[in-house]
Image (tube, rainbow, N blue to C red; front, side, top):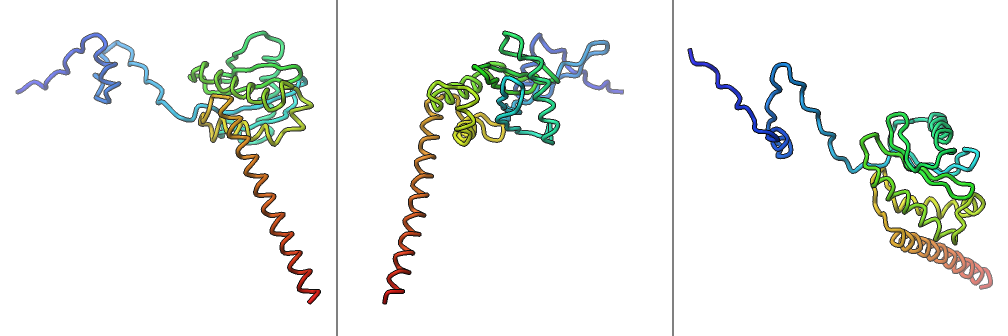
Length: 210
């Protein structure tokens, strides 16, 4: 009877190379722990971005997955994160299986949330871009009063940095340019509508005078 062909014993590192190349990984020998599965890379890096005041109240928030499907669950999470981070000097926290980077400015706390295996440097790049973009837009007054007066602009800034959890931009200068372009385009559209309405009024007036 022909013996089944044995799986050749891999050289050190051979299993990892096979996994990277997409080939089959040799099975673990009896008594050896199975090799850990590598996390699949994903473009969906950001789970949430939110800004709280110095009492932990939400001012701006966007969630990009269904980890916290309801507003109530989101706000409970934000309160818990605030209590964990508001009295520390660190810039990173691990909470509820998530990685959180944050920054305070006068009476604001800015947070960027990723999964537990997410690269902290990537999250920090998003946080820095958000802060620097707001700092430019608010003329170096990154505080609650000015944020509330420019909330539409703040959402535009965030939308240029993250879309659906995917990082689009990490250069604040590029973000500001795109936001200004969108604002100018919106202004032109408003002017166009006003001109059409004015023209219609003039036509109606002249038709009544005839």
